[in-house]
Length: 118
Image (cartoon, rainbow, N blue to C red):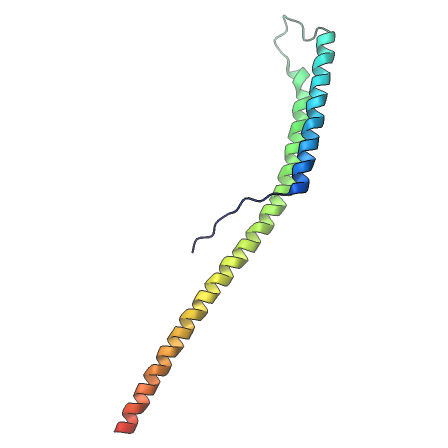
């Protein structure tokens, strides 16, 4: 049996991310409008990193937060899956052991019959 990884969802985290992305989107629009009103960046300036760096950092921070929550959940899910696989393997070994004990009992009964026949 091959263990399969399932995708998981954390509804609270989904809601949080949706709200944070909407908040960031609004801030990006406000920043863009403010830059436009100030006519920034100037047409001859090709380096616009300073204008998007702040927004980029906000999204990176959100990604790091999601990653930390997902790592914990992934670890828990892996432990649960490992436990389930181990239990399935243990049941299979117990089944094999039961079959082997049944065969052993049959062999001993046949041996006992042969001993009494002699």
